Image 1 (cartoon, rainbow, N blue to C red):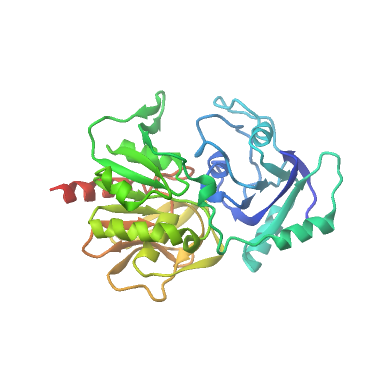
Image 2: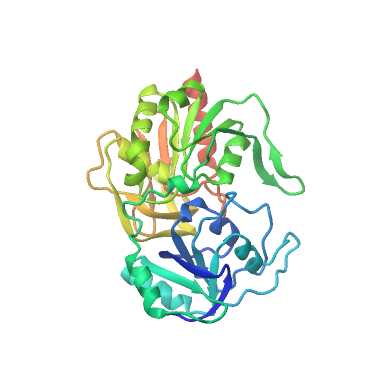
Length: 366
């Protein structure tokens, strides 16, 4: 048990405890729908010192269960800040704990793997340790858990906002580009902005949308988005749709959960990782070019090397642990990556993948 000072929303919040090594972008991390069901330990000790603002969010409703911090949250010092992190957490129903040994927690997670945890914030100081341990132990864990229904959009929508630019904010896209459909398994806003910024007209559809409905929109390509939970669980209804889209011959780009489910759709296997990849400093090698990019990552499952089917080529590898970070289908306009090329938070090394997808769509239209 770790004792500290509570911030944010009072109550007991149970989930999978993971650690994130990013030094910036805590607001983007906490609003990433892929963190549904998880409590985030930040290895960087000073979190919250630039406050929060309405622009740096990746979803309408944050779904992270909580956060664990080394240092108390100070008053914000940034010209863009409009709210203290503690007030923002409270408004969004997220609890946090400060003043704990995050290095020790990180070592535990690295040695024993991601753990079930209960984060309790009681302003009156009344806590029952035995009850908290029981609640953490009884939580079923992410294996076999489909969390996409918690984060997917409820209806079809058109997205027109492009990436943020200095002095201009989020810039509207230019009409008339190739239409693409983004299947929302928990999509981050900056993925949509990145698609608009390379010239696409983007329609977002809920995770349970049928292949027939998607093809009726006459897209030039399809994006399988990021999202939370076990890909095999979401794949029960998502994989058959992906297989029909593959059969249509459309260009397809998968990201994170979408990458994993593309793998399942072509006969690969996914597996739970020991403690996953969570951070904005992960080196990945693009095997097709030989270049190394620093990437933003958030995933606890991965495509397994064992049993990788014929016709699936590994295009990217993690330089931390060698796990698969990207695949393509040989002879087909289909590829996917495990990390987050939209760079929110994190470096912009992987923006080229959106241009690569645009080139595939253009070639397919010839």
